Image (cartoon, rainbow, N blue to C red; front, top):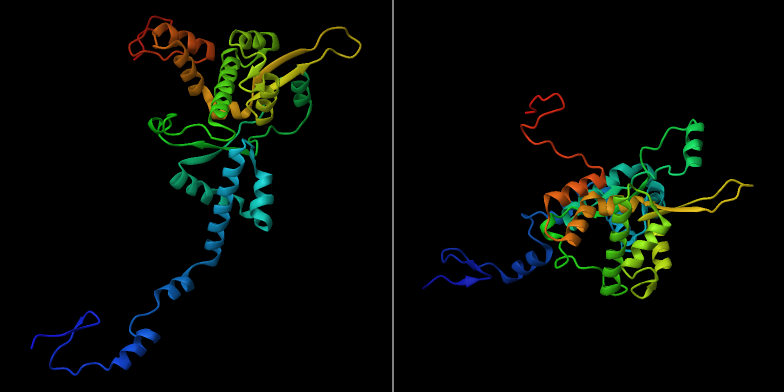
Length: 300
């Protein structure tokens, strides 16, 4: 007689068949020979590590929500809205959140640069004060760490809120304004900015929004900084308005973004364009191998 199969196991003819009642009890109670691995894993898991992972995920969600509205992710906000009573664990939770952002989302948190002292009054006040200069701003934004090949508009299109067209228009407008300021040695006067916008037919409206409101939104989000230099009290004269680079404009667009914008506008790159572009941005020309220095000696 051929061997019979029961519950997926091969039964041997020489041994008596197992009692069905006993098998049912073993299945209900669990085999004594096989330990419950889930219970062991939960017992061996470090509660503090699990709590840190949950806080890191909470920080990732908070960072994504802030970046969606282009709101700076401030250190104080992280402590208040994410960490709560665990404020001293900022560095540890921040490192775990960075790891999750890089491995899962292809992003990372980068600290915004400290706002520069632009007006003469601000510089004098900074010189009079004995306070040490800040090394960090305490505010962060999310930036992509994906390779350039995966950052094209076909792969990462603009947001659909409010609409894809409005978001693309706003992105192009603030990239253009930031590039104009950067190419003007980080200081663009109000009349020059208006002249540039008039040439582009963007001096009154940007899409469906007033240009003035768009510039205020850019200022609020940190792309640009508007400075008003008023004459001293008792002196006649008009106020001078200048536009400068904001911390988000520096970090989000950067020199690479400005250079890419100019190359896209002028089309095919050329040596003359690259030379003028580097000169306008204050980038030193790379020395070629074998070039001669001021004394006539060859630089290797």
